Length: 197
Ligand SMILES: Nc1ncnc2c1ncn2[C@@H]1O[C@H](COP(=O)(O)OP(=O)(O)OP(=O)(O)O)[C@@H](O)[C@H]1O
Image 1 (cartoon, rainbow, N blue to C red):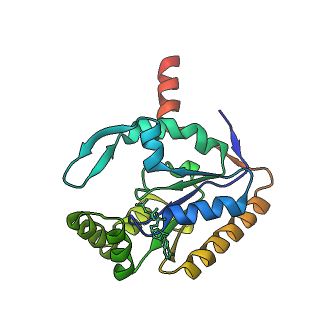
Image 2 (spheres, helix red, strand yellow):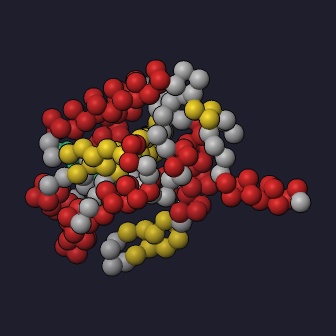
Image 3 (cartoon, helix red, strand yellow):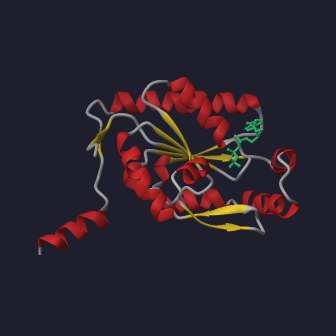
């Protein structure tokens, strides 16, 4: 597995409908070679990382341990743009920037309604945005220096955000000519130590 990453790993997170996928796709296409979009909902399906299905909220429950094991080699490569509404499960040792997108409730309502979401699912997501659930997870899960909040109410904001993140990436790459060492998973180190005893 790769010991050093030469491109940063970025999480783009926020309440469903805030524009994570739109931002991630646009960012990866602007950054070009060496960067890859990981849409976790699609990837969990592709890599069979589901535990069960929640009928009430019409959504799959992801097996987070399996997902993380599967994603670790990708994150060690660097250049991952991770797109998911949960952010704090990804190991801090492999994450360089967490972007939390925020959207006004009226815009979010329109986007979720347009998708045909059930009323209870729309309300759950609007509550989640009002209560800043994803933002709180981000600031509890990562050091504050790597967490930024950007608003995503309009296409102009989306374009500005992507330009800002891309400029941040350029600076990160310049500031890390030797790359960044991929720290090992402490659980793996512990179990290797135990094996040696
Ligand atoms: N900043 C924005 N301005 C206007 N429309 C936007 C913006 N961001 C996203 N949209 C639109 O909102 C809808 C949802 O966007 P998108 O799929 O990117 O959100 P998401 O956060 O990835 O959702 P999910 O978590 O459910 O996958 C799309 O129709 C997209 O075109």
